[in-house]
Image (tube, rainbow, N blue to C red):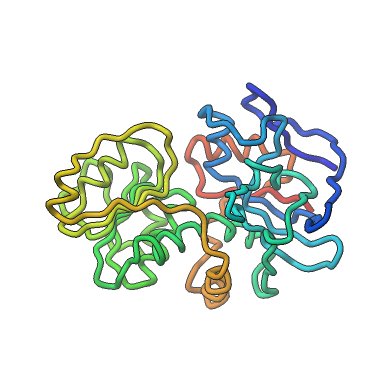
Length: 306
């Protein structure tokens, strides 16, 4: 099969012919239909964040496809089981024609959701859903600010607005701020324009300075929800947390039981996928797709495998 392989020290993925993986007991083989290109993939390529499985490694964790043994249309959980197994990190992912996964990673995808576009639900939609609904517990009366309007952040905007919250989108990219308005943001600001306090702040970039900036926007009893990944330290005054009864919350992945709720929201048109996907590339275009994300030109590109 064809696969885009990450090799040690290489800034480009290499298209190679490798054997189709053979599923063992409790595993299934999935013919990949599409796989989203995520900022997390760039962490491994550009930012020195190691994958748990050492290269050579197949990245990609937003996967839709067909179970070869049954013909069932499926979405794959990007993170699963108590051991935090992650596709494209702990085990090989979806930038390949086939992927082998444990049965517990497979979720049936409703016929009403297109197989290709549906791949981004696995992370770009489900991760913000969990952050908004279960971790930050956004309410219709909340004033929300979202730092970073990329593929995940844009859905924090969309889902928070869907709940009736007053959402402010914060980014340096004017085009992304315009899309945020279309998806429900009441206001848009650049980072240096913030002059009010918020009930909930989401950081969806993964930089110490933006985590610190997001924390500073909180009012009394405010909640900071950190979705962006960084392994660097941050500086925050704990006296403010205590005195104003504030919270700092982390969020990763999504509960498996929530996917059926997300599917319904997509089918009902309450969560829109079409605004999020910029381009569709074949596997041979993977490095162009990554480079567009690297340069912040797109929210999400997807790679088509079948």
